[in-house]
Image 1 (tube, rainbow, N blue to C red):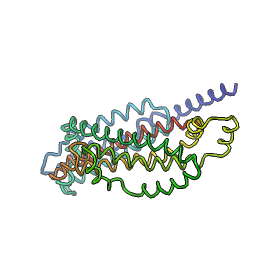
Image 2: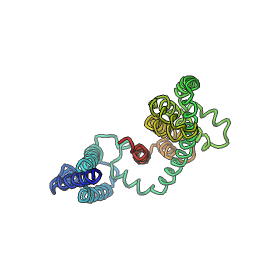
Image 3: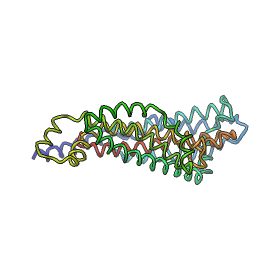
Image 4: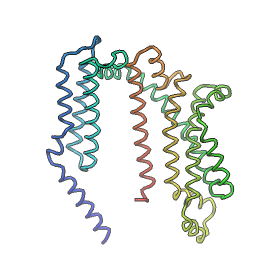
Length: 326
């Protein structure tokens, strides 16, 4: 009966949330005004010596506004809708200022800061090339990161379970974890057959130490009553580690994994800029060396997009595995 009441209450709350979004809330917001303003400033004369490719900026803005209208008509949660339109409003504001400072008033140096229309044009022109480079970077990240976690989490469980070994391993992990993995690149180049394997090795180290430290910290801070309850039930050691200790330590394990993920992307881009023959870091380095800052900005934008998408997917996985905490 109580379960029925809870479900009924959730449905009522969802209904009320949906009803709180009026037509004005959905379609007459600052984001829509900024979209109109972005289109209006395109009527100003250009002061840029190179074609600013304005049509590509307008096309992007129209597609984005269509997405905003579709999402606004379908979304039910008011807070989620507000967050979405705030992000798009920020993007519109950035494009307005960028357009005014480049194509319209030529405030910023043209060779370093091309108009946004040329950026969108370059995205389309280099689309296949960008997908190839991004795919190469993601493959290295996944291989190195997953290898690091596969080694770090079980090792952290076993060492953290032993108070004596765990105390010693904590200081060892702090020592090695404080050394930037990128300094191992010269040794990797000397010992490993390809630069790709060197990149995987560097990512492995970047993921290993934060995940290892987070796992051990999580194991050491598991509540004593949880362990005592499992011992009363005469749970075997393997079951204790992977069915009792691991779930209880997951919050701190995820903290370490999150840290390792962020460092991995930074190191991968740096490694690709040093000696890779493909990847987003290589793309940025190659064109920046030739002074092609349009493609340089495109590469930096792709890095940001990839990092945001991977982080969002990781956070969804974390929420799913930690759903018992809610």
